[in-house]
Length: 109
Image (cartoon, rainbow, N blue to C red):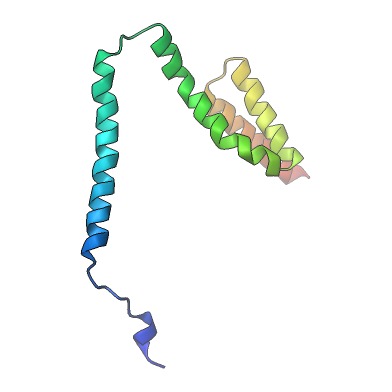
């Protein structure tokens, strides 16, 4: 048995390199465009309320599809997290305590 099966094909592909560089440039300029556009947007009011709501909306968008495929213990942890968030707890603290509730439930049951 030879070590040929371990050898990697390290040929240089110019098309792949160009694609990677272009994707990186598009990503960078998308982020830069957001910063530049915010120069003309007035601070306060609707914009500040909208920007403060984005983290919660992203969290819900990530978690909502998984609610249908989790068990009752994970749903209980989610309820703990939601309850803590509703009473005004720090988001990170709420997530950590919800995760701890699930871990404790798994350890005990």
